[in-house]
Length: 143
Image (cartoon, rainbow, N blue to C red):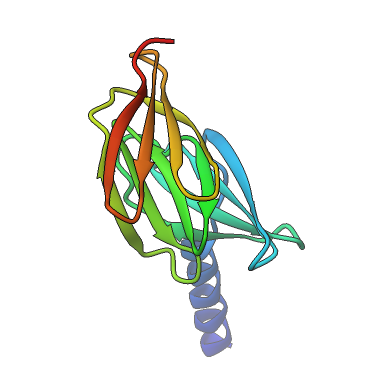
């Protein structure tokens, strides 16, 4: 009986540690490659994945300042985080890009299939990010 209780308790602890939830969700992006939704949790600096059965798992953690807007380009999920756009490999969730745009509060994000565009809510500007070069330029200085 004691072994059963210990095993049950250990299972419960493991499930609690691995359980994920939404914490101030900000943005959602559908990932067709893995048939899931990726959700930015600005409340705890994470991005979670929600599968079609509704199961939520961790995708990326430890993201300072946000994350906010999300956009997929190729095999990478890009997220607005403070004045930066960070990229995460879709297969692993490992950060593969970190472009400092010099912005204040990047929020909205989109792509034209080649470049990423991010809006700076505070400075009312739009940045154009060349993800291959890891650089950004001001696309529109004042909206």
